[in-house]
Length: 458
Ligand code: NAD
Ligand code: UGA
Image (cartoon, rainbow, N blue to C red; front, side, top):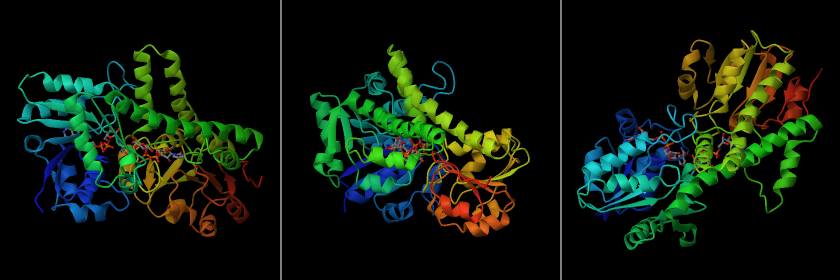
């Protein structure tokens, strides 16, 4: 089939790879090229060992790559040959200078804008896929029009709402697709091009269009609302522990109110992932920038509670294990920031491991997918942590187990077998409340869930 339109995506990461693969599957008449500055990443996308793990992704790539999906390092050519350009480069929290630790670091974004300007010879629709501070499109427009070379650029905002671990399902059946544009004649025409692309598989009523600033801001606010729910339930988990209420029962009662809803009310060791913290801090920074101190403080509380929850978890471990962890062997079950991904960015496991090491504990980390990334995250404490994929081997000889990721395989472990191999008294700290606590207690463990009374033999 002849390709009707060419699409380029700059940035072959967790977003660029899966989103473009889904477009390739749903729109066979489009030819899609994904480029990246990272040659190794591109090599991996072109191999059988993809750079990211995501359920179903291997299959999707196998059926699209080489047909209408291509991965390349030739950014200049990609820009020259494609009229529709998605940008999904990383936008991490700034680590230096003004706004360090809060603002978005837009250096990769700006480099891309300048490259688009440099290599464009014909009109382009440039689509923000990355998550960006509201009003970034204005900066993009200013850069693109700065050369006055007569090339027409329309900048759109089309934030991505997929979650890792369920990326392909989210991309195939999104709750909504949001497309923001300038409300000029040419902005509206560009918006329509993108609407038609998504209409290949997304029902029309789920394709929302808006002004460009609403679109940019909606992405930050969506993540802030999701993270806020987790911090809300985690804050209440502390109160449950103080009052013998049960967080599972409270979450169920609250979530059954249809105005609240039941999703994202699972208590945990805290949220992780590359986006929630960075996007909330970005929102907080923006609010401060606009002089909205109270609004900034309100949202900053979501991140504060998340840090508190991680500290609380290790404090519970310390207190339960007779106020000393020095020399004690602790097995961490799970290092990924959530199940079904190998991603460990901002995983609570990183902070928890370091807190345990600070108490001089002897830590063994287990995870079915994330050990490679875990070793990178823990490079600065190299030699102090053991990495053991098999959970039985990791737990053997330990004083305690802490469940940090809600992998299904942990629910199905033979805890009798594990108990036999551990030192006594044996402890379980369930940072995800996924285990059968009563059963573990009956086996002999001292069990410490989150937001529920502990089951202790003492
Ligand atoms: P990522 O780090 O996995 O990928 C970004 C890629 O961009 C990297 O491979 C990097 O090498 C490349 N890159 C950087 N500068 C470049 C340049 N000048 N030219 C070419 N390539 C360049 O990041 P990600 O997780 O895919 O996130 C990308 C954006 O999408 C972020 O803004 C993030 O907030 C947002 N987002 C992420 C998710 C998610 O689940 N990870 C979901 C929704 C939105
Ligand atoms: C999140 C959003 O869900 C996506 O919509 C968004 O596109 C994405 O961020 C992004 O912008 O990057 P993601 O971080 O991949 O997706 O995964 P989530 O399922 O949202 O989980 C985030 C964290 O919250 C994980 O650590 C997870 O374990 C934790 N979580 C989630 C809880 O602790 N409790 C819950 O009830 C739900």
